[in-house]
Image 1 (tube, rainbow, N blue to C red):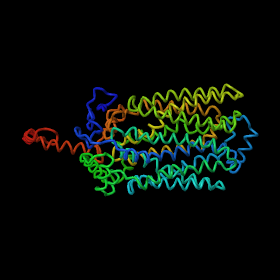
Image 2 (cartoon, rainbow, N blue to C red):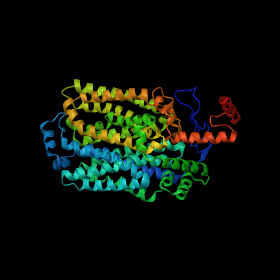
Image 3 (cartoon, helix red, strand yellow):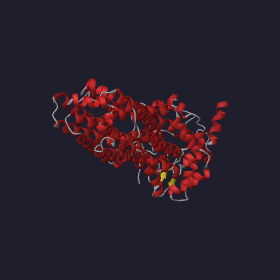
Image 4 (cartoon, rainbow, N blue to C red):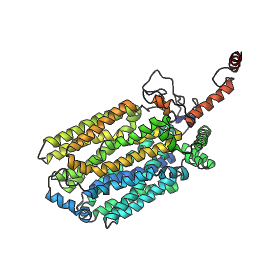
Amino acid sequence: MVISCTDPLDRSAVPYPNCKAQLGKMAGPAMSGETEKTYTANFTWYMFFSCFVAASGGALFGWDNGVTGGVVSMKGFLEKFFPDILTRETAQAGDLYCTYDDQRIQWFTSSLFLAGAITEVSGTTARLNRKFGRKFVMFASGVMFEIGAILLAAAENYVMLILGRVFLGIAISFASVSVPMYNSEMAPPQLRGRLSQLFQVILTFAILAAQVINIGTEKIYPWGWRLSLGLAAVPATTLLLGGIFLDDTPNSLLERGYPEKARKVLEKIRGTKDVDEEYADIVEKAELAKLVTNPWTLLLFHKKYRPQLVCAACSTLFQQWTGINTLIFYAPQLFLSLGGSRTDSLIATVVVGLCNHFSTYVSFWSADHFGRRFLFLQAGVQMLIALIVIAISLALITPPPTWLGWYIMAFILVFDSAYAWSWGPLGWVYPFEIQPLETRPAGGAVASLMNLLFSFVIGQTYLSMLCAMKWGVFILFAGCVLTMTISVYLFFPETKGVPIEDTPFVFKKHWYWKRFANIKDPHSIQEQLVEKKRAAENAETGLGKNGKATGEVEMFSSKQEE
């Protein structure tokens, strides 16, 4: 396996300090600022199984995303909770824009995201991860999702619906932080990228599964919607059981004072007892991490970490700026408004789900081959074209014929495929991989917070915007996609082939971020490790603190005194 040891944007650059160009079989680059060590790591099915079960947390988000739009279009659900919308469907047949403009239904959709955002803002997720470990938080996520699914399936009034959504929001907040951290710490370096994207693959599969289930439950009138919402307990059970039977990560165990167990888990997931070097580096980092009492203060108020803060926040913010969730939600309502049957509208969402899921696999190979920036930029152009075509079609073709729905669906697929191999998976990978160790928990929480917060904002306003702006809402999203694509071009450095321990160095070479990243900070674990190694090397070779021979330093000092 060969990885790049230089800045992909600067071929004349010197190698990153932690990078070893040629890696042996299943060996990863050393941490702690060292250049020559490699970690011994064999592929183990236990490691893969652990990451797979943890990544089932993506199914929580995916199932809710896939099931909600379909349930809202089911007659039995509307009759029980939103009869006014059912009346408008008949009275305003053919109205593409205002039939579903209802604050109560928007609260049903967006309350989940508000609950998750509040959980992140309170710092609950980060504190639980640090105090009780990743495994405990995944278990808690499964429990919360089970409770939410039961409340939704048994709902007899609007309050029960909202309460169930609140529990789902807390569960998703827990999973969206703990699962990526768990997988990144369990996976060996050379598999980290693929296993980190496993979260998104399972998420898109859950969306597809939920959409297929909706086709069947829609025919079970009037209570089929209960089955759709209640089946969310299935992926929750997987995560819950994983939280019971899986091991926690070596990093988390060391942070919480279980060194012997951490060593055993590391040997187990690496498939060898030869883990001395990796274990020593994890111990070293864990000890230094204890000195960081408040990673939030570092990330939010220290200028050195401004690049990581902005890029992490924008990564998941831009996910929502694309309008992907609203397009997936809008698909069944679009077909209903154009005169299609409820079953046809649900089949349309399955087509979108199939495209979303299988397009995600493209990023498995292309993200490490072409790089993150290339996929972000290419997808930005593709999504921009699709949104403009959809807007122009709706604006010019009036009254809309039935065939227009399939025409627009084709461009929704063009849009969706671009999102699925770019912002979908990489919007979760990028904000975690750019964080230095001392801000990683806070950086992950910021990314999750921005995703949930703007999911709430868009979910709460989209149907109202659609009614007020009509086809112009797609022009609005096109403007957002254009803005974010330009932002990526200017401010997102490439991380392809860069060891996760060295990602802070890409900001030190960036044309804009270098003014922040090169600020010296005593809290930087990366800088402490590099200085520690340099001091040790100088001591061995008889060099002074500044890298000069001790004799030279003494002679220079004597001349200065004279």
